[in-house]
Length: 410
Image (cartoon, rainbow, N blue to C red):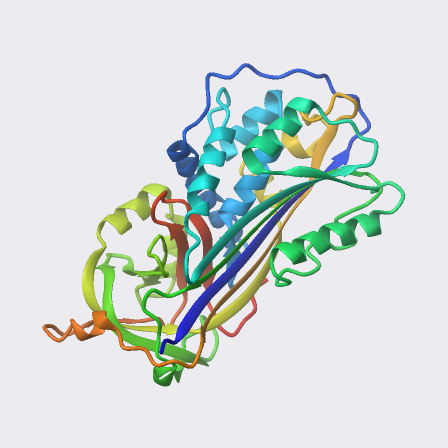
């Protein structure tokens, strides 16, 4: 009999493009070839950590993001960007402006599709929502369908924006098993909206080595600036990849099948250490930490938590350098040569849950192998960071901060 501990995460990114009333000049930029999957992964991870730093600087609470979902949606929009708009988006997304990333994204999606197995489910879905009667360029539609599997759905933003919003929210809810509801508010869609690009990514995974719920006990979790809160703390002894860093401790826990895993980064118990780590969080830093991981006997204590995050990211993206895309000078003439478009809003919603499921007893083989040495204590009783990654590609799927396991996030 087996106890199932599931980590379920859903992320949705939505890009809303509003018409600016100026006709666009058609045309595209010559490219020097396509990016490979590894180059897309490197770019996506660099963007992920950049975005996290900008979001984290504005909030001290829980943060939940799916960088891949946001990157995927922005990459679809990038397919129609031209001129300065394209150059700025490329810089923010860490892409070379003279090369196309879409084949690399298609290869990445194929690799991630192989992650699903017994106990693990990972799904990506994209959709294009178009104003009825709006003419999109065949080249743009071909890229979206061939690389992202995104087909257009017709809605009427002009005469019935509320019905269009319900249709988009209905699709999002369906693709995420009902976990992400009402992604778009009435403020997100209006009669000026012409095009909405949506991406949904959902993940459900059982641990490779589940926790025994009998060992879960209430314990204090130290919240910065507040009194400690009581949280259910799951505990197990086993063999994990672990490292002690100058900044704190890092541990990797795998999901069933071992293609996906989550990294937990626990800062030292020093005031401000979490903020210092976040300010210096870069791809090279993360690679350096991960390179130090070694199999160790560990007594792991991890809190259950569930959080919901919703962000309108246009401010952060502009702060990162993507300014023209949101202005009247935006050039998305690779999407349509009939109307001129600009980005209006970038809405991202996240749901994450770490809990236990099932009623079966579990005997861990790894735990029974650790009688030779005393285990390292990895007790997550204070704010921490987590990153869910695909080990075969190295892509960061989900990224977050937990300062209070009882809080829902923002």
